[in-house]
Image (cartoon, rainbow, N blue to C red; front, side, top):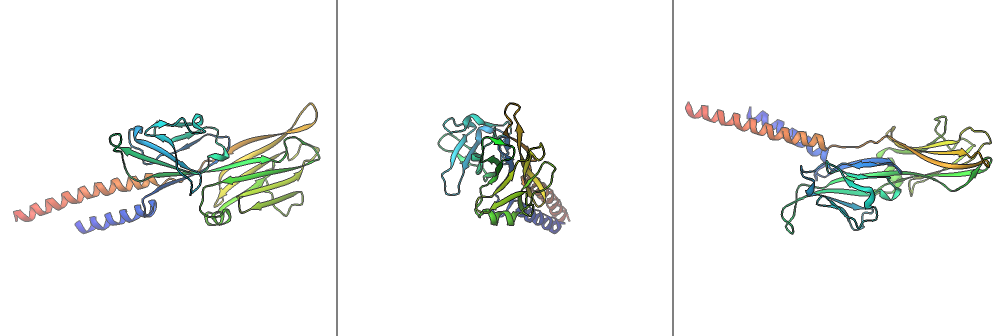
Length: 287
């Protein structure tokens, strides 16, 4: 029985290491469109958020900026008004902008002031921000318009390598829900693999058809987030004004919960196995 317990425990430990990574670092990826609110989970939080510190890096070689220090929001950051700490120690960002992409690290520190010691490993969150824009501020029917859709991400690889390795697809969809392709002569579509940006150029029709375009991001054919660019006519001078709206399907990849369940199961099984081994030793001594 003891051997079976040990074999099962080793299997759980191995599976847990595969899910969390050999380094034990917890990572979460969030896809969001600019203009929306987002919650970045802190998967290593202790019961008291006064031990929680949030750090931010936009680039891999940039210095980390402290957004939250031991549960207290820093007021000297350029976006402190849009940040707040949730009751579960998550970091909430209002009205997300394209500048909010990057690497966010949630840390837990305990101890006396000046003698703080970090507990556990960092819980890292990577928000990927989708942003749409236009080259024109005033648009009229019969004239051409250029729309830009860019995915801002914190990644070590180039956009092209990252997209291919993670199964990411970035494309435009028209008002009828049809994916626009380069084969359609009504549109000119260009994709820049250097900056994860797809450009759409088209001539606006005089009628009210195809005035709405949606940029979508999918990962392995699953929609992650989308942003809609709408052009509406003005009743005064027939000038068209661009309106940007967003619709997001937030997909968060979280493996921490299973890892925590596996860890608690390992501890419980260790206790059971130890008790059974103790009983067996007592029985052997009586004999």
